[in-house]
Image (tube, rainbow, N blue to C red; front, side, top):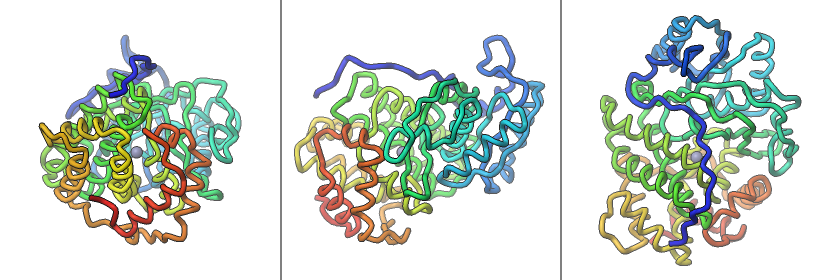
Length: 404
Ligand SMILES: [Zn+2]
């Protein structure tokens, strides 16, 4: 296997990992050895009800009171953050004189909090800092505000990763953006806050964590550290996701998936994602209701099958299949079989593109936008898969064919 010993290790986020760790947040603010220094927090949550209804918001506010800091609550983040949303958040942050951010919620909330933290200290709008497509390709001059990420879902890895995706609704582009200091200063990875997620979303998010790691193994730019992290993440999530999805009381299984997701974020800071994420971001850029993890599940088998058919990296597929539980196998195809088995066990094997109104007449445009706005993801594929092949892959995924 071609694995490089040359890499950059950049994982600056302090992490408190384990059930009940939220109770230690106050010890991290304005204390000796604490991660955060500040006097006024902007608490960022979604525009939905769950963080309040489940009591998570109250628990966070209680921690801020214990730390003796002031706070304001910003509750306007929707699924798949768009430009206007994060810029409204920046205005709110500035108007209230906040000097750090606490994000509690799913990947969209944590991603939006990163954009707000960067815009609060820099001129211009968020799209000025997008590095692909119609983005302004500027570099932020100043460090972002410090932030705390408290995920209530397990899958995006956003709590340890510096980047956050944002959608430009005028162009249907969805691009990951990062800057100096956008990786959260502190992450609290506490499964007690993740137990109330609906079953299908737990599955979508868990698969997202797996795909962050399978893609970082797949890339021809694989390095020894990203390989180590990704294999552990794949193994942990694959072996615990079924229990976490099907038993809403199983905190241990949920914490294991949360640990795997956290690792997958670390993997993205040392390794790289590939074309499947490029295509999915373009899919959910156009079809805004499509959950990111569901979009990845919809194309995953045809995507990986293409590289198996072309013998791009048989040894990597064998290694990943073994990590998922097919011990002793020497057949790359077992990777697809393990994915299929996990989909069935988690009850997401029957989702279809038509469930989100996806129309094959849009596929060529989706692929074109993906290649234009995130070309680096396609450059990371193990061997070149061109735009025509990607359109065919999407057609096969639409028709549920092409998998052996
Ligand atoms: Zn993802």
